[in-house]
Image (cartoon, rainbow, N blue to C red; front, side, top):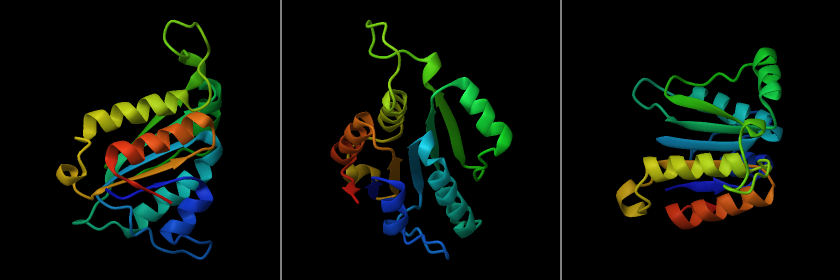
Length: 165
């Protein structure tokens, strides 16, 4: 397994991406990108770099989860500047206004909750949780600062044996 990054700035520093270019050496094989909408530009930068280093025989594959406040916000984003990814990377948008908070509470979905649920479900389905079996071809980048996102990063570090940067 590779690295769980903590913020757009940390991701760019750790990956070597700068304003003048760079290389994301740790993002290969399978990639999991998860972000709150406030980090959408950082996600775009990471995806652009992944696209720039792919070859026919070395293709990154994976999943992008992006949490937005509402379906209306999602519509505005996708109309203005759609998020384009390589063919083997899927994007899932998570609108909080159409999701509930903790089961049985009737609460609204707080920032980071939908993202945390989606990432944990993906990890449970797509990995064994054993770094020896899964190998080191999975990299995860998690952007956001809400308490739920901090907990998510800690879970990924613990579950997947990832390193924090």
